[in-house]
Image: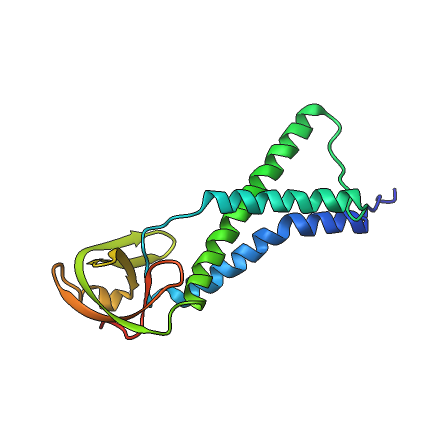
Length: 187
């Protein structure tokens, strides 16, 4: 018995690329940011822009609709109503998650890439220390400053060099959106 081969058409391939591209781009930018910014960033508390995620998701849907109208992509929905609903919500979840990750990754990288060239002095006071146990153990120092509470990831060997109440005059460069980047290491 000969096995039936199935090939995707050009339109189906394009649809798949458009659906997955934001997610893969976000993962790439997150890996770049997380691998290069760990030890030099003084991060402000995590925030994200819901409006930006929704606008990017709307743009994503508009691109799909325009390409469908132009006949450049093919959409094949499941036959049963239940499967159509599951497909719709799975796609919606993937799209929102992808765009959320893309906004987060772009913000993190652009904040660093477009940071100020001007070196400022910022007084930092150690107010806490945190060890995060996950897939890898991460060590964080929590500072109070005139700019608010900031977090810095440090190596395990430097973690014990910081004591609560210790004060530093740090040379920093202001991030484009928020936070700071150390111009010189603290220890």
